[in-house]
Amino acid sequence: MSEDRRRLTEEENQKAMAFLNEKIAGGALECEICKEDKFVLIDDFLVVHSLRKDTDRYPYIGIMCNTCGNTKMLSALMSGILSLVEGRI
Image (cartoon, rainbow, N blue to C red; front, side, top):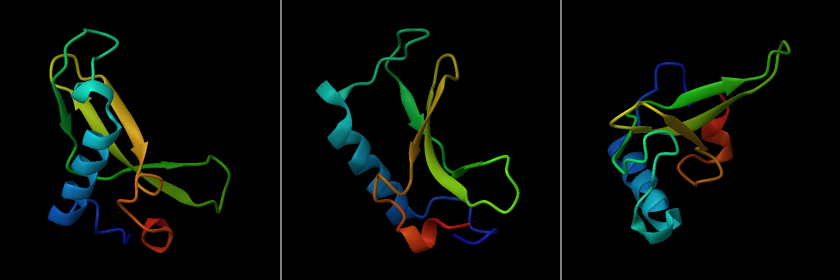
């Protein structure tokens, strides 16, 4: 994933939605904070990196509660949205 490629493509968006629909038990995800069940997929990849120098950064997809903003991150690699080669940024 290059530095200028932060947004999910349409194909990646579809993969993310398919992954979420498959994994969310009962078809709805309840927010632990406000108890609502309306989440949106964040359009951009989120990146987490170690505080150690010269380490890899890891891409995630994010889903955010529409009511309170509680955000969950899921590995873009483990979910199959990106391959290991694409995921190294």
